[in-house]
Length: 484
Ligand code: GLN
Image (cartoon, rainbow, N blue to C red; front, side, top):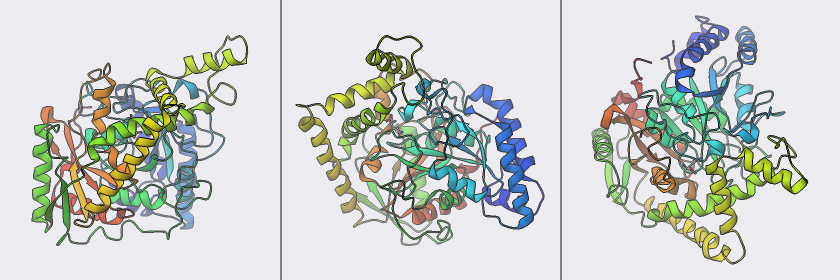
């Protein structure tokens, strides 16, 4: 059962071959067995999950069911879920039980899905290796000496190790796609505004976007059907007609124009990654696609631009954690200012502090024009490169990550090396475009390689079609880590 797709699980539940309670319990058992090794979950709450499963089982009796009813889905611990501990991977929120549901969470609840637990993540989603979590690093299920990627590393590890049927992630600069690539699963970051950010703890609000992570493009489409949708509580949520993201899955790819950015295929990409990505492109040619060389000349500036804009927004967003309203408060302090200072000094980890300092600096008087304003201008140029490119092609492909999963501790002392993990993913967030990663082979040390597929605005259905056709023709997505 644990290798079944969401479609298969849904069918088994509707045919009453298994109940939601049984299915949920089997995943909970697997988590109890494997989580000590992987550290993929921060919180499991069997009582709450099983209560939801019992309710789902009554829905099957009444016939009011959807594609995800009764299916256990894990949630990144960045999403507020009513009654659940919601930490965002930080000591700052070690005791925060959310009094309300994020929009994404309530969409899953309405669909009758089961919240299987909260997955581990980099602190406040800042990181590419899951090593900044207050709750300790997550281990890559393909090799537990290696990182799963980040910041949605708990989700990626949980999906890869079959600890849940599918799960959610968030992506500010690559945090869905990069861990998906490093753990050999599929993940999609939708167009900015497709999923509501209400109740999703904010990192960099103009970049943050929620999205599904799962074992196949088809599973992602079913997840996105539930996650997407207008929400008036998020002023950047887009009011659009409800879409069925599965509608184009089975279209043939004949005539598809794939753009390959020459900047992505230059120095910097590991030769093992290059080999797997090139083999995937060859497969697409067999499926009827044509290849166009394109250029994204400003994409080389995306990492520096991101590391001005994202910390700037983070420094503002994180000012709410002051020890007064919620979360951690230093046990001993003098006056009010001392309480703020001690609570923040003790509650935030090193990477979060680094971002707050950079953000405060680039926004300060005298530096704002030189850094923040310049970065905003280059952000526009990066987005325009994509608009130009889409005059010549339908989707853009390249690597998701320059390397396969690296060793735990390998990049810990060098933030710039860590930041470069997202060199191929960040431009997509800066432009607000949708991007996904699907498994396309194995590289050095038999670690998974991800193929990145970037779409035009609101072209998620086409991207899922492009990914699904590849997954019908190949079986990279169905490999699972052995010997756990
Ligand atoms: N790794 C990037 C960072 O550290 C992106 C994180 C993300 O997408 N949440 O900011």
